[in-house]
Length: 309
Ligand code: HSE
Image (cartoon, rainbow, N blue to C red):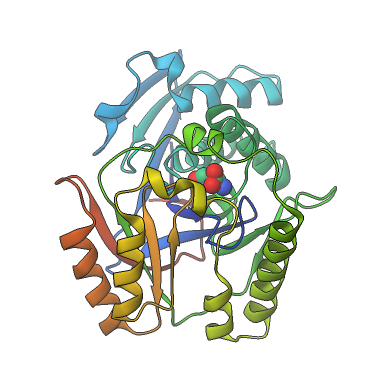
């Protein structure tokens, strides 16, 4: 029997649309992500548990975990009958890489159970392919951090899909999910098909600057450059009063604030715990729309997907 945990993540990280992703771990020490347990069985069987299991499709063949199992068996060209327990703790359509958590945990668990027939590049490639089927187009900025941990730079060149880049150890990442759903496919559909040359240049400058500031460890330069000209202007309308939240969070002292992945979760950054706590209280009072919403103060999770027990 193999049990795997895969952490939640922030796609885009503001400045890197589809190119940057960060894995999260609450500073409380609690885990924020999905768990998948697999064991060999006579035939395929799936049990859903966890806080958000009631939001999963009734039809097993529509469940991401089933899709992962089918794809994995196809790729290794062998049918492996398994019994799977999915602990679905991440809200679907939250912008925290919920589908990536399930995809990563399932594929890592299957690969471990079968004594690693796929290497990490092949596994990540498969994760991206499945994520693409779910959201409409392939993007690695949730699956890569959830699988590999830390802050990931998506390269997608002939040899490497993603690599870890340095982050700032004293940054607190405050995330707030308001308790409502925004499907990634919908948030991708509303983006323009083409962008002006000025926007492309500005985006390249900010992203290159952010990577430079990360390597040269200039936290304030990095935070100032975490701006999104590609998705945020078009996605604001999908979030509950995002601009008001951003303005207030900045006033409290956040050094950066943006949309997590395709939203509606927002993230903000502070380099001291007192400001992080103030931001967390403000978001809890003002950004959450119902009792299912949550706020967490997090660090980046350097481990990524891992075996439990
Ligand atoms: N890069 C993706 C997007 C992340 O913004 O659509 C989805 O969580």
